[in-house]
Structure formats: structure tokens, C-alpha cells
Length: 253
Length: 249
Image (cartoon, rainbow over all chains, first blue to last red; front, top):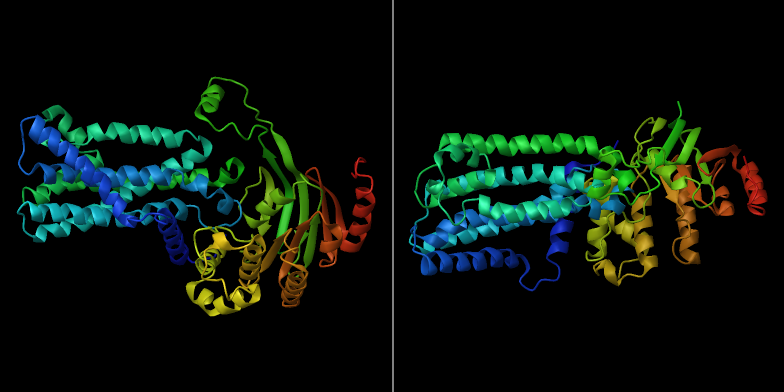
């Protein structure tokens, strides 16, 4: 039995991951904005200059998808290896293993804050006004973090036993770009796929962000219910699987 | 009641520890070679450690000492038998678990102490003492990357002995630093013993551990060969070590 202090240990692990991740970067944390800015620039060129524009405010429209997507892929990708990378620590101290992948996700969460900042900045540039609806953003952020934590618990534990998991996660992330309505609108999706589409938390987050920032209304209740259920369901499943798998980490690290 | 009761404990490892790729799993699923038997790192070992006792665990390389320690500390799970720890036993003395070269000495100190189970207030209160004992006052704000290996070990040792462990597991670490620091760390360990801390020393250097310990356990190829007073063990082990081709069992 480990008899330490969860909050303190978690904070120190987050601090370590955060410091180590940005140690040798001149731009530091601002690197996390570069990727969405470049992608949105390219998409904007493709979908408003090469092809006929289909939506207004395309940069904001695309960023509503890119922000949850980028945070998700970056965080899930990095954190999947967190247990394997902490092998020395896991074989030596009895610190609760759950803290390691969760710290890895939380250390990345400042990225989400920065990217939300970028999104709101874009809204203002394109003539939007601050609104009370913006208060939805922290709620959506928490839901996304819960979802990523769940998947990370699952994949980081699996990665101990099957080291290819890291590459499988990368492939899933690459495919996801097309399955999240980043550069197309939800209205083009045929009716029969819509309810399934909303079960993808990233698609749901995108729709919710567009509701708030472009259409100026709160996200629909059904959408929020699905998003919350899938996010916390994933967290619960990840937690349970992790608990089962963690007892044998020592043998496989 | 004994502080630690180890009863008929066995631990197997798979021979092919490297078989951790997807194709190995698929191969096993379709009835390929599974290596279910593996080899025994520890086989049918039983012993007890009383509170306040100091115990030496000796054996040559590959005798299963580290695996046994891992099970006592709770990081590894036995395949057979049980390890019962009665009371609050928290510290596996690892010098610098979680140390990262890119953090400063002080940041690593807080990190490591948090992992060992100290609270923030406790670390803050002991911080100066830990740094002073490790003799790192001048370089505690430098990144660990710039430390010599001796400095890193001194820091790890100092954190561990200042973390109030009920059980102190000392794994080949009494040789920390130069001769003077070794003496200092030996007297620190002696001081903890007087306070009633239970000590479990691991080494293949039998003279070093028996000088600290009153009780000895000798592991050979995963099996317990002898369990008795440290002095007897020292004689038997030294005798065997002069001619290690014989089987001590």
C-alpha cells in the first residue's frame, strides 16, 4: 500500500512532464499553436481559394474542429508511451500507476487553454463579440480531457504488453482527421449517419463549438448528453482496464 | 506479529521477455509456442522479518534478490504464495526514483519525495536538512544533467533516509559517494536502526551487509539456502564463494 499524498504526487508529475516537454524550445508552449495555425491556413486556401467557399468565416469554422482534434491527437499520442517511459520509476516505487498517464495528459492541458485562446482570438478578428455562451468552453474542455484520460489509461496500459500500440494510436489519429467534421459541415452528412457521428466526442465537440461561436446558441441537450456519456464512459472503462492490467506491469517493463 | 511475512512465494518470468509485439500476441493466439512455464526467479521462499530487525539478503548475481525486494516493496506481484506486510511500510529505497536530468536538484528532490509518499509540508520542512546531508548546497539549483554520478546518488540517499521509512530497503547502495560520505551514510543508517527502523539490506558483498545486520537470508538461484544469524551466514557464504561451482543447497 502506497501511503503518500495523491494531489502532491500528481502535481509533481505534471510539473515534471510539463518542464521536460518544453525544455529546449525557444517558442516553448507557443509551439502548440503553430500546428493548428498552419493547418487552418492551408485548409483556408484549399476551401476558399481553390474550391468554391461553402461556409462563411471558414477559418473560425475550421478551427472549431482543429482545436479539439489537435489537442486530442497530440495528447493521446504522447501519453500512450507514458507508462513504458516511466519503467524505471514503476519498478522502484509504489506510486499509484494511474497518476502517470493522467499527469501526462494534464501536463498537455495548458495546450488546450492556449488553443481555446487562439480560437477566441480568431472569433474576435472575424467580427465576433465576447458572449456569455463562451462559458461553455471550460465545460467542453473538461469533457475532452476526461475523454483523453480514459483513452490514455487504456492505451498506455496496453502499450506495456503490446508495444505496437503506440503506432496503432498514430494510425487512428491520422484516420480521425477525416472522420471529424473539420473542413466540412455537419449538414452534408446523410441523416442515417448523424446520430452515430455525434457519438464521436471529437465530432460532438466540433459541433458544440460551432453552435457557440458561429451560431450563437447553446449546444443541443442531446448532443451534450451524448458527449458527456461517451467521455465519462470512456474514462470509466479506461480506469477499470488499467486497474486490471497494472498488477503485471513489473513483469513486462 | 511479524512486520513482513513471506509464505511459499514463487515468481516466474517468461524466458522471452522481448516478445512484446503484436505479432507475438497473434502467434500465441493461433496456438504458437507460448512459453507458459518460463523460469523461476524466486521459487518457494518463506521467511519473516520482525519489526526493528535488520536483515541482510545476500546472493550472487541472478539469485533473485531484486525480484524478492520488488515483491516485499509491493511493486511486483508473486505468482504463488503471499507476501503480507503488516503496518505502514512505504519506502523502497531507490536512489532517485523518477529523477530527471532536465530538472534541477531541488525539483528532483520534491518529485522524488512526493513519490516516496511525503507530504508537501514535510518536504518543505526537511528540504534544507536533505540538501545539507547530501552536501549539495552550492549546486541544488543546477540541472541534474550537470551532476556527477556521486552527487546524484548522494541526493537520492539523503532523500530516502530523511523520508521516515518504517522499512528501509537498501539495495547495493551503502557504497554511495567517496569514503568519507560512505562513513557518514553508514552512521546515518545506524542512527535509523537505533530509532527502530527495520532494515533490509541487499548485496553480494557479504562483509558489508553483515556488519549492519543481525539476521541473514541467502538466496541461490531463486531458492532460500539459509535463514539464520548474520554471522553464521557470513561464514557459510564466504566458504561457498571461494568455490562457487558447488551447489550450496
